[in-house]
Image (cartoon, rainbow, N blue to C red):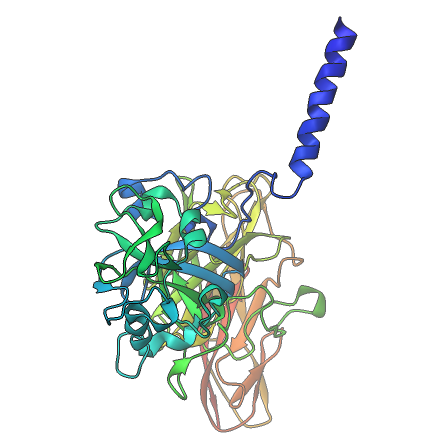
Length: 451
């Protein structure tokens, strides 16, 4: 009897595996994109309603949206598809011209959406960050804002489909004068259609190029990254990818510190650990108005997605890679600064520090300078004398495999350079500053005058 039961269970398992491998029979699986937390179609989010659903909304061009598709490979790579979350686009007939037509390519509602990106209209300034896909099902090319079709609408959770009124889809209905729509009250897709001369809500979708926007996690807002030279959105967000431009800053080749080669952001980092959270603060920085904070465990690569974005000069977080922080480990943090247009100013140094529950290591408490000002001649050198005061106790400092005990950075290499030992050499007449950083990002500066 036991043997027959085993054979029967084995047969059922084999059938289940075969069905699971058959095309069209597999279980739904969602890839964890960079914006998966906001994606309304995930198992965690698809049944949300009320305030929980509203909390998933993001903002773009001062309007609320739902993320209905996340095709990102990093926070600044790939695309996300947004669906309007309010009625701010108004109402329209699908086609208001007699003889009426269900053809989306010649419809009134398409003309209304196309006009939004025309010069002087509400989406003209952001049109370059919007991908323009071809809508092959309705023979439309280069569509910036567009209506969903029946298939796309059915992939949207019912609670997102529910709306204050009925809303149009781009698919044709069953009859020549009918277009598909969604019943706002019940959230079901009416593929049979509604008369095209009725006025329903216009609820467009659009696809954002993530390389051309920066996401402010504090306000859940996508903002275009603008090139200051021509005031148009850039094709690439600088400073948000994993592989930062490297610059040897007072470390040997083995202990190279990754910073931006043209950084103009020299602030120190002040880090505190309390109540399961890490708080990091920094100086505002000239022209800086937005910041992205990155964190990782030492020995691991920084993720491409920041743990926090903010317009403040501090940030608090309690998770790294979606998990609670392990304070028994060593960690590292850096901050990227952007100006008001979204142009990158630079990165801070990477601050390496021991978690508060680490049993072996302790952190620097302060940087001390014996030399706070230097005056040198062009071609001559002098040394910035500095030391580190450590926390009390028997624990030891992090070793130099993390980064050098002291790191030095000049604010203007055309005035003066500085090597890994703090030796400053005059290059041209003028004044600049040399910053001295501890392992955990604390800093003091020395004013350098070259004659």
